[in-house]
Image 1 (cartoon, rainbow, N blue to C red):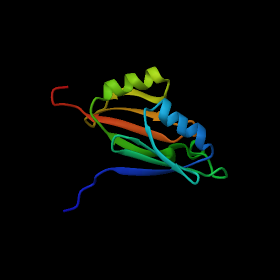
Image 2: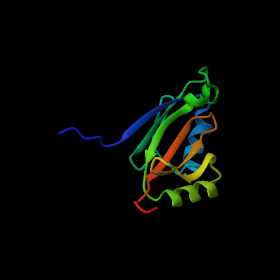
Image 3: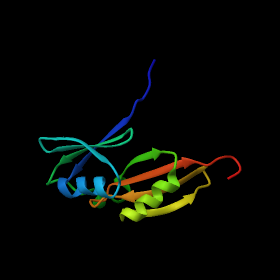
Amino acid sequence: MFAVKATQHVLAVNDIEKTESYFLDKLGFSLRFRVDGWSFLSLGGFHIMLGHCPDELPARDTREHSYFAYVNCEGIDELYLDYQQRGAEIFQAIADKPWGLREFGVATPEGHRIMFGQELSLGD
């Protein structure tokens, strides 16, 4: 039977050290390992592979195409508060949306965007 265990996103970054530090310090990821220009990071079942690509176009230059993940989660208000306290770049404040989700967005130093969302309970 097919089942998704986790997701792993691959990001080309110009400055792997700065981007890795941001994911660790501001977004609370943990380092799994590094190898040959790659950094493997995790936040629970959300995995990131940072690849050092110094000559590639930074994500911020792709504007709306810089979104790469939507993370469905629980405890979104606690996560939002934690990210505020850590100084993460929040480009979209937390809010209840008409499509039944409470969500917010963060961006990395190179402009990759991640949305976090939690389903609203009936009656919210």
